Amino acid sequence: MNLLIWGLVTGVLFGFLLQKGRVLRYDKQLGALRLIDMTIVKFMFSTVLVGMVGIYLLNDLGLVELKLKGAVLGSNIIGGLVFGVGWGLVGYCPGTSLGALGEGRVDAVGGILGMIFGAAAFAEVYPQLKASVMTWGDYGKITLPQLLGVNHWLIVVVMIVLALGMFRWFEKKGL
Image (cartoon, rainbow, N blue to C red; front, top):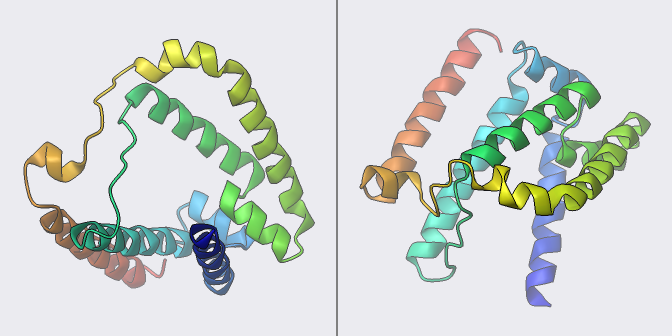
């Protein structure tokens, strides 16, 4: 139960940050897809970096245990393409469509219905995918630090430096 409460609290906090970061707005979504407004890219990279530092810190302190999903190229590539096409068609990704509905944006309902339809369609074809697409390019449960044979904090620092450089370049370009 305590875990559910933490999930609810962090979910509400993340939704608040999505709204305050203005990433729920359709024009921001469209700007990201057209590569003329990097607000969403900056928000997403910031979220990934905070998550990366937090998860590795909690793991090193023994408070959590990493439970990795396998790196399967077939399902990752096809899933990424379906996600990208859906985002391009609707103008919202799954998370932002729910946040946009919370803001009262009715145009997000189409994205939510598409998400539910997509989940149902995936459940229907899952047995066929499990024996085919979900086995193509299966590299198992690996991380970038394991692949490179380096300490995970080295990768964290490199990612932070790269992100800060990218953020600075976006700001110089007015993106």
